[in-house]
Length: 332
Image (cartoon, rainbow, N blue to C red; front, side):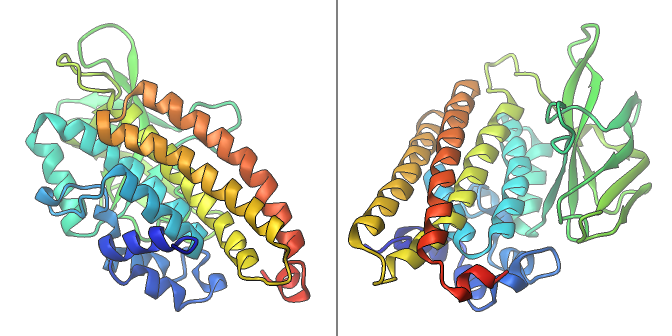
């Protein structure tokens, strides 16, 4: 089997037409919110990749989703990164819906059936802030949660159907203090506006936006031992984002493997590093498929994420050096 053939075959099966569509467009055109990548992702059913087939999604296992994401990263790195943020929000909803609570399953089915995109507005651009550290204020009212503040969505603001945003709210069990939660805000909500969509300065402003109670997911584990819903989302995000980056680097490795000017030992060395990194990530995926995501799996995902990062720090400079002709080194 040729390099990346397995991943692209899984992508073709689960998201028909996507790989061919991305391959037909130049990388320069694909890299950004103004390109056709998000449209191709929607048309292929990408928003429902993680949603069970019984709920109108593609029903991908974790291992299959991992392989799809590597294939996606090899064609369109920006789209791979952006879709990882969407899948995080979907995974949170799926974890919350595992107890067959109707509102969550209705949301999940709506995302899959309507190919709706869920943007991700959290705090990772603030040094020292936890990912759920709110950039918003939230107050509980009888009819839901009132949210105000400003966040960034990394290219999805102009295309999103829902915005997932971190908030702090009173603990649901009545104990004193607050707990982190995720509020899902419909894009058409009164009081929500978008500035600079598709640019580096893109931001979303929420001005006293009302969020219905069924669209607020807390970080607490349920009494029946269900895994922490946010931990489940973070497992998926770390795994898919890591493999999306590996997919981008794999494109460079693929070019080296096709270049007869490069020695066989160099090509084999890069192949071993890339496939070793993928095998490590597949171990996390198999653990999710066997036991489901939990905090222990999140730790495993983080170990793999940093290991793959170190691998990429070796792969990318070496491939660029080996490919160092004028066309490669001067192209965007």
